[in-house]
Length: 360
Image 1: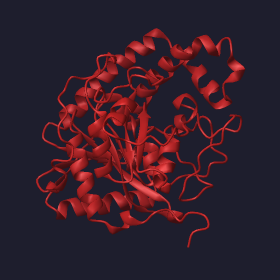
Image 2 (image 1 turned 90 degrees about the horizontal axis):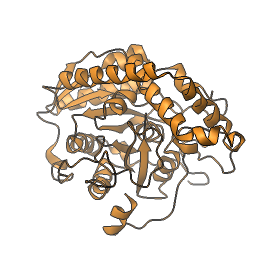
Image 3 (image 1 turned 90 degrees about the vertical axis):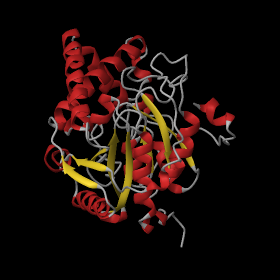
């Protein structure tokens, strides 16, 4: 991924922070500082692609890379008010990326706008024979249809995900409803869609994540345990308790859920829900078990490998960003970017940057 970006002339400024091994959290016992949310330094950026989200939001970089296993691109993108794309599984090479869960890991771009994400994804995407999961699907011109607008798009709304399964904040729900109203005014067709409960998608995802992460780290967890941060160590150790039959059952359920979403989208271009239930919480006091307490809104796309994108829909309580999430059919990144670009261009608040400390 870095090589491809360099080949098209990208200037690599440096490396950015991430949660420990892409599954930690805001920790008190790590040897490096945690990134702060530029909209409010007391708030979390989310993770695991935390540094990229913060740097893009603050204007320190024009764009960057992220990885997502169960929400690590779309989650921080939503909390920091930027655009992030989790491509289709296999669209972007993972060569050189330390894995967290082989069957779920994705890499993708994070930037201030959908157009910038399209530019980055153009360079990043493509087959890589050194990644066994890399797809040979041809890479289209992701900018070709950016200005086509949303007229004619058929959009399904999975309301129960953010209204009942993991109830979103008032500002998040309003942002989604306002965005859907705008889509309809611009000529898109809006439909209601119902899928399996979000907790089913989330539980299945975390069986894979925990089991595979433990399999990778077991040699060091058993011999160098104290060198890990507490949050990562305790979370990952749970993977050692997952039985083979649990993993096999998750494989079976995953096939069912992939068929379910594919069936629901036969006559649709996009699904809409959200990538975060609300505005960024305070960094202090976050539970290390937080991602088990409520089903993760990003897991349906992460589990099935369908492409997804977080799009900022405005500012909520405390002037903090809120977002919606778009999901497209496999290798439908161009449709995601087209819809997101049209929405962003129509809303001038996208020009509003975080009020940096000391600025006027």
